[in-house]
Image (cartoon, rainbow, N blue to C red; front, side):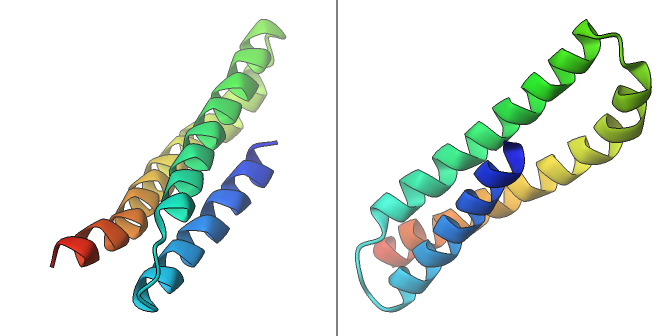
Length: 91
């Protein structure tokens, strides 16, 4: 599920940047992108919680350390991309 959420967040962020460059209002794309970024984080956290409940320690040890770094990076990129439309509007 988190892969669907993250793909939607990326697509909306790219549309946000494209519409902003074209001079159109992109607030809905910004909203959708940041919302699906949050859904991605929640979905991954839920997967981790499910692995803890099932005591699947190998899945936690294999996936969580790497994915936590990737999710941090993707969240920062999402915030940066979505801020383009805000800063372009101010300048």
